[in-house]
Length: 118
View 1 (cartoon, rainbow, N blue to C red):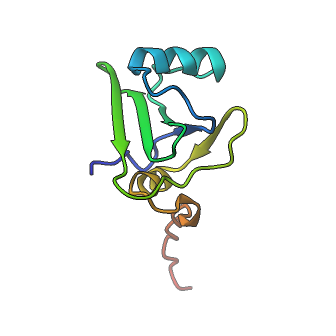
View 2: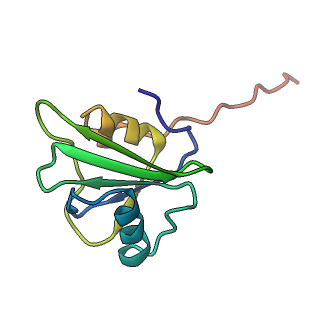
C-alpha cells in the first residue's frame, strides 16, 4: 500500500458515519461537524458502524480523494466512540489500515547529530 508521507496530518472521526456518503458529503461533514478544512491536505478517517470498513478523504492539490477499505476478517482497532476527532501519526494510520493495533505504534525517534570529540 502507498501510505501517507511521514509528516502527514491525520484526523480520525471517532463516531461512526453513514457509509453511503461519498467524498463530497464527507468533506461537508468535516467542515460542519468537526470544524475542519477538508481542502487543506489533512487526511480525515471515518469508520462504519461495524468497524470492518473505513473511509479516508484528503485533498491532494488537484482533487478530493476518497479511499475505502473493508477487512475480510476482523475489525479495525478504533478509539473510543466520543464526540469530535483525534489525531494520529502517519505511522499509526498505516497500522490502522493494515488492521493492526495502532496504539502500539509510537512516533519515530529524532536522530542525534554526532558530536565532535574534544
